[in-house]
Length: 106
Length: 116
Image 1: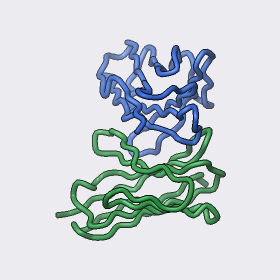
Image 2: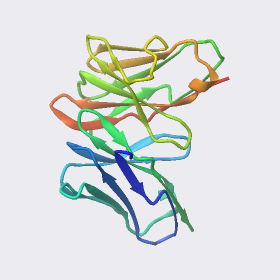
Image 3: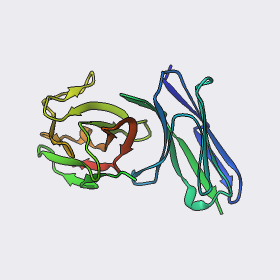
């Protein structure tokens, strides 16, 4: 079993839709990161969470430490949001989910 | 916010040559940096932990003589892929925690290596 599980693996949405990507983990962590990886590979760090909720523009990330679960929400999705979203958890060492490939159709 | 840079962002080399990838923390000090590798359609996997002033620690299955890591200063770690082969073609990413707040990790943008 992987230390980090993401769902769904693939997601296609119409522009404007509300999107949720989930991450469950089994290891003890100090922090959880949500990363965005565009075609070509470049990584952008979206959020770092250790508790509660964070919001940045149309992106919202939440974490429930007791349930070992985090969600990344995208409101009013746009084609430029199309990317792979990766959940990474850990402290001293990080474990990565396999990513959720999001395609937003105009 | 804190920034970690990598150079180059992409590199193409011939089989048998060596390639050096740099990871820099631009506005903070990092005594430790992590190197990851990502093969197509797979998740990132930790390769090694780079320690300033001491030897790197490598994950099981990663050849330390092939992937040379040097952490010469508090802001720079380098990964050298020696005698590169096509199977070394991958996406290499570093991350660095800020010394004052260990769980605050900052990820580099990655380096795409293609070995012909």
